[in-house]
Image (tube, rainbow, N blue to C red; front, side, top):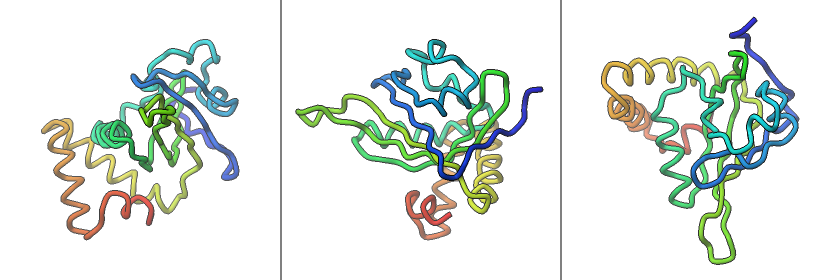
Amino acid sequence: MANQELSFGKEDFIVSKTDLEGKITYGNALFIEISGYREQELINQPHNILRHPEMPAVVFKLLWNRIREGKEIFAYVKNKTKNGDFYWVFAHVTPSFDANRKISNYHSVRRKPTEKALQVIKPLYASLLQKERSGGVSSSEAALYQLLHDKGLSYDEFILTL
């Protein structure tokens, strides 16, 4: 039965690596298991194979902008599995660098988000998605930055205090 929420232990980590285009090059056992795909089905596939349709694109825009600049980012993400189930993660995504300090790939470590954080993130993402559907990504981006401005917080401060 699809559309069931899956979970994993608060001590567990989901780990994956992608190339510069976002294609999966590595996934740990939990990443593979929770995704519902076989490892062979995931390797060399775009990481957005796991993108849940209820995720606002502005989150991924922010994520990709950050990591392409060589910076880390923390984000809450709702992923979908092969059979249509879903799971929430608190992701820490970082670029990896070669000996010449050039970005060589991306590395993501995800842990189980707290219920307290999801009580804030779920309605926020629903609101951003609604704005995105009516006014495009720029509309949801404006709403996100207005929220941060109103709270007097940077994106990182907001996310890390949830």
